[in-house]
Image (cartoon, rainbow, N blue to C red):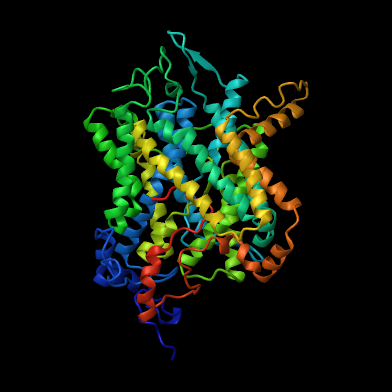
Amino acid sequence: MSEISTQPGAVEPMSARPPLKERIMHKITTKDGWLGDFDFKFLCSPQLPFGNARKHRSAAPFYGLNDDLPLLVTIVVGFQHSLAMIAGLITPPIIFANYLALDASYQSYMISASLISSGILSLIQMSKVHLFKGYYLGCGILCVVGTSFATLPVGFATFDALYADGTCSYTILADGTRTKAPCPEAFGYLIGTTALCSLTTIILSFVPPKKLQKIFPPLVTGVTVLLIGANLIGDSGTLNWGGGSNDCHLRPETGFFRLCPNIAAPKAALWGSPQFMGLGFLSFITIVIVELFGSPFMRNASIIMGLLVGCIVAGATGYMSDSQIKSAPAITFLWVKRFPLKLYAPSILPAMAVYIALALEAIGDITASSEVSRLSVDGPEFDSRIQGGVLADGFAGLLYVTVVRSALFTVTPMSIFAQNNGVIALTRCANRKAGVACAIFLIIFGILGKISGVFLSIPNPVLGGVTTFLFASVMASGIRILSYLKWGRKERFVLAASLAFGVGNLLAPGWFEHLFDGVTSTSKGLNGFLSSITIILSAPYLAAFLVGCILWNIIPDDPETIVRYSADQGALEMGQINQTEPEMPSVGYRSSGKAHHEQEDEDVKAISASTRVEPVA
């Protein structure tokens, strides 16, 4: 008779399992079914930044992918995963809605749609549905998805072009100030274009990861992610921290935006006023304090804690209004608001570049999730996870399209959220049931429309203080990718050339905007192509991505580099470059005994090995 493992959470052989009814009753009526032997004390105990307390605590059990997970652990860990995601999920729709001057009803809906879509698409990503032959949909492990920050720069460029060509209009106020009129059609252009370009990711999902890495190397991905974060800090994070990212940051002497966020807002003040800077700093320093002294549970929700403390102080001092909470519906769902689906041709090439970057990021994210979940990171099973995960990202893009000419989920492209790997490491729970619970929580948060109203009431400085940290974490992720490279002459040269265009665009906005001013043509196709080139070259990370890819593939390797690469072929694969720190054992079962205890400290140190972090919570 085969021996049945008695370790906590171990999976019994199918033949040894009791009937389903008995298992359900045991799960809901017994202490073991609810609590198991999970270390709730560790999860909720504050941690001092000094001393040996962390080194001498007892180890908690590790729950693998398909282990038997206690009910309360499922709920608590799933809730923790959802808290780690919320700030990253609500930020892009808020930024897009403000950029397009959409009213509160649209803003509230876009936040709810982001939360609901994230929950539904996370369930698809974790399912791993067999399609045909060796191809799957979904990676099949605890891997959640959310709205990507990489779309923001392309969205800004698209919206600016639509306002410039008259597709979207401006409103002239009584005092003569020209301000953007609400333009939901522009959002329809963006999601329609990105939906078409999602075919790029679907095609790439059938290409072996090694070949993708040769064409789009980690060096280029690292520079791209670095510049995405830097661009967002300047275009959104610090501007909101100072009071607002609209025209008020220009500090005009007259007009509707002479004060931030506008003269009609409560406690309006000049951009950069001490009170605004103080609110943003309070939110930012709260994240730091929680990281220093908070329990593992609080540290994984540090972004939410920063927003919460900032909002409490802002509300007590009169900088918040409850009007948006009152106007938000109690219950909502997808399709309450619809955006006419259209195609903006000049944004096709930039959107394709975004999807290429997202596909490469997905490879690193899934590798990180596999490692921190103690699953193998090579072989056919791992390759099928990569293929299914990248395909699920592309499939999510196609879900935007329906025959009624509106976006199905009415959200911008989504990709794997890497910071949740840190939650897995800290909770020692890689069980898929916790991921399902997380997805359910997100769907519930989205359906409850008043929650979206709460998020909309967050003052700009509070949001800016938090998002500046989020976008800086994106930069840190890019630096992390670059730090794993083995530097030679080719790497240094390609990096320098990429940064020349990327940082040049960042420091001198509009560098390429007038490149084709002297070209006149009646051809819509030619004009659209020239507009695409302008958008790519005007976006720092897209310019760096294009230059880096071209140079990497045309510059020959140094002789010493060729020898080094041939001696260590696996070292430059996306997943191998971005190892968690320290490297975790690649096994497909739960560790136990002495080795199990020795692994505890390493698990706590493990962080996301992705090519981006959206946000680090």
